Image (tube, rainbow, N blue to C red; front, side, top):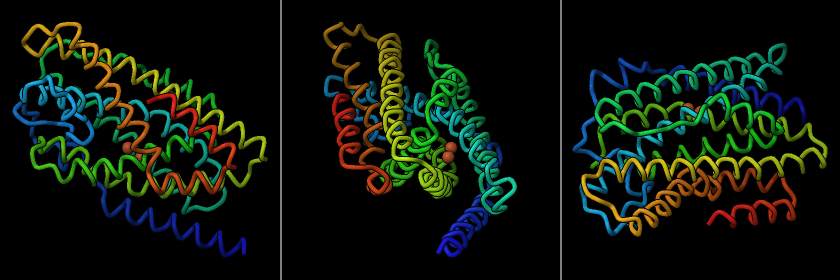
Length: 310
Ligand SMILES: [Fe+2]
Ligand SMILES: [Fe+2]
C-alpha cells in the first residue's frame, strides 16, 4: 500500500514537472511585451474590489479604486511569496536524497515563485510610473516571512495552500472573464495562474506528507498557528486598507469628508478580507483538505476565529 502511494505521489510530482516546463514563460518577452499601464482601464475586477458596494463614488473614482487595489494585489503576492518560497525550499530539502521527481518539482516551484516576486516588483514600478505619487506599501517581505516562518510548518503549509487555491478562483472567476480590465494586468495574472495551477498540487502533497508525520498534539499546535497566521494577515490588511484609502483621498481630485472616508476604509477592508481570507477559506478544495486533517473541535476553533473578522 505504501509503495503504491509512493508511486502515485511520485507520478504526481512528475506530471507537475511536465506541466511546469510546458507553461514556462519570461517576464519581458511573454508578459510585459513592451506595454505599460493605462489609467483609462480598471486593474482589479469588481468581483474582487467589491467596488459596486461603494455607491458614493463616481465611475472615475471606482476605476481609481480598482487601480489602487490592483497595485496592492500585486504587492501582496510579492509579499506572501517570500515566505512561501522559503517554506517550500525547506520542505523540498527533505526530498534531496529521496524522490528526485519531488525535488525537481519543488526546485521548479521555488524558481517560479522567485520569478513571480520579480514580476510583481516590476509591476509595482510600472504602476508607480503611471499613477499619481504617494502610494505606499511599507510592509517588509523579509520581516513578515521571519514572523510567519517562526510558526509550525503545518500552519504555514495550510496558509500557503489557502493562498494558492484562491489564486485559481480569482483568475478563473473574476479576472479572466472581465473584458473591461487592463490587458497587461490580465496577462500578469494569466501567466501567474499558469504556474500556480501546478503549485496547488505540490502544496497539497507536501501538506499531506507533513501532516502524516505529526502527533495529534503537534497538529493541534498547527491549528493554533494557522489561526494566528490569519490574524497576522488581517493586521496587514487593516494597515493597507487605511493606507490605500488615504492615497485615494489624496489623489481622487475632490475633498472627501471624513464621514465618507471612514466607511470607505471599512469597504476596502471588507474587499481585502474577501480577497485574501474568505475567498480562500470558503474554497471547496481547501475545505475538503482541511476537514480531512482536523477534528470537529479544531474546525470549530478555526470557524470561530474567522467569524471575528466579519
Ligand atoms: Fe506565485
Ligand atoms: Fe505559487
